Amino acid sequence: MADRFVTRGFVGKRQDAGSAADRVPPGQHLVSDFPVLSAGPTPRTDLRKWSFRIEGLVKEPAQWTWDEFQALPAQEFLKDISCVTKWTKLDTHWRGVSADVLLEHVELDPRARFVVAFSDGGYTTNLPIPDLINGQAFVAYAYEGKPLAPEHGGPARLVVPHLYFWKSAKWVRGLRFLADDRPGFWESLGYNNHGDPWKEERYSGD
Amino acid sequence: MTDDPLQDLVLDGNAVAGSLVDAFGEEMTATPGECASCGNVAPLAGLVAYTRGPGIVLRCPACTAVMIRIARTRQGIFVDVQGARGVAMPPAALRPIA
Image 1 (spheres, rainbow over the protein chains, first blue to last red):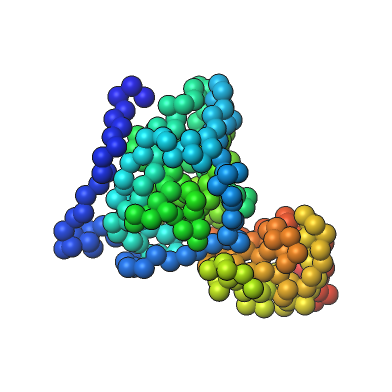
Image 2: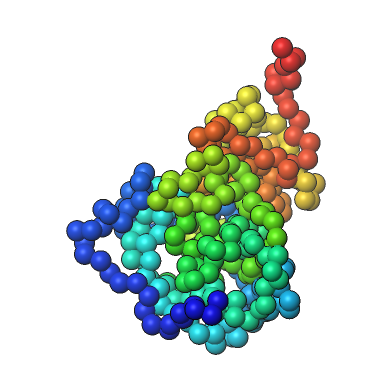
């Protein structure tokens, strides 16, 4: 944790158009729109009742109201995203709070090895802690300069751009740290537990 | 009607009749299913179907709880019916075990 580098600056840079093909993982195709995928009705959480919580194997849980969350150090992120339904979108521009910043507010139990992100509506997804930290994941509340739209997971969603986008839980409300892995909504239904697009980890057994 | 822009993504169980056959081996749309969360009973054709995702999610039309999930993967079809208590399988599905 001590050597972690946290910046409020713009993370990522646009690349030459000619290299776009090199940025599309195997089996994926490029899209210019932003497809909406959902497993249920869009939650409408009143921001006055919204909170974000870190719980489970932590010494003391941490919780923020919407206003408190907005006051946390935020960053801009420019990331390519890939959905397991085979679309990839380049240079998506987000604003949010790095998971590293959130984790500065809790003391993890040494037994903690996995995390489950949980959302309004009951959706869950699981990650090993090494995929959450060191600038790899953030909780986004703005997309392309505007508040994140509900159909894209607003008011806030997890974004873990190096994994298939089902890991980037919409309507996220917290992170629960666990000693044992607990497969989430799609991971428990035949989808890969890890979901690295560059390794085409789509399904269990891939 | 609602102002939910996702409403146009929402179908009913008829739209996934083929996937239900794949999952259960029989035509299932007329088969009643009971929601494990609220007890509402509806034919599977009457469930709310979300199909634009990694898999198919069928929800209770009364309380929106997940009743049935179906995912087609390289290993085969995964079916989760934990949210549906007492789906009455049609007689044709009750084949003796060979």
